[in-house]
Length: 365
Image (cartoon, rainbow, N blue to C red; front, top):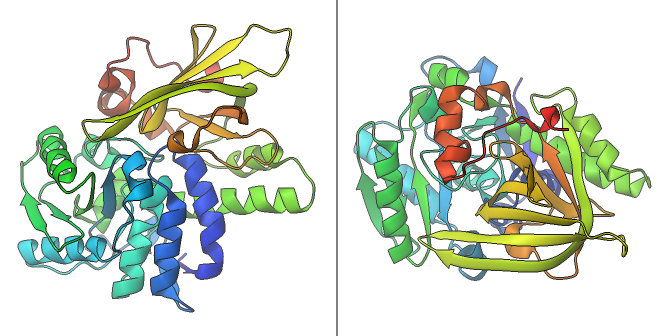
């Protein structure tokens, strides 16, 4: 059933969204402040996807760009609604609701900004079930809904419509180029669809899951319980039912560069045991893609690879990784709809040029 989200929920939602962002997706704490500014004492209606009317018209809204840029280039806050209105004008139809394209990072917050400004409800679902770097890496596209036409808006009121038909990769390529020329950050409205399409193609109830995760971590810390146990207990009854601790150690090296509109790099983590020579490495493109222990893959996209503080379980983004941090790395299983052959072709290892096959995190020794 539908429920009301208020400003009091935003810190927990941001924490859970950072975890689901698998290191990327942009900083949700910036988004939280933008939502708080617009929302005030009001509330936002969150719609359960199973209850949507089949003819409901939904336009997802989001931010795109490199997370490293977003730290320094704070949005004006008006861009997401401008993108929505631009696409509505182009289509000749007003949206009945908006929705995230991904549930992790700042894009858990962008539809809430739109909702607070327009009064639209937000659908409790998304098209990635985590965060991915590319606009074509969507369960929407995998199961038959295409992103075009896309509306893109900049902080100075720039507006662009991109229509590549059913070629979502070409849509991503063009939008990425425009975003780079806008300074590395743009806001978009895309993947317009019906309520029936949402129920068929979206990963359900990921906003409420992010909120539950963030709240569980906070309450566990307040009651001096293990926040890691709280994460596992919260996810156990969901589509993300398996949580595995992959490594505990200290960040000893971070290589990070912003190129082609993405934050790319690697992080090396060494064991806290002074007598151990174990090495753990994570490669990322905005989000963590593959984790290797002593050169052996222990988790790989689309499963979630999450770096958190080794005591508090506070999630750490790829742009937040620093030398000396004590961390735990968690592997979290993705829903089955994100593991089909069609889904893996869109956002599995080969989509990122990785030669290793996908093996579910729960199946690894």
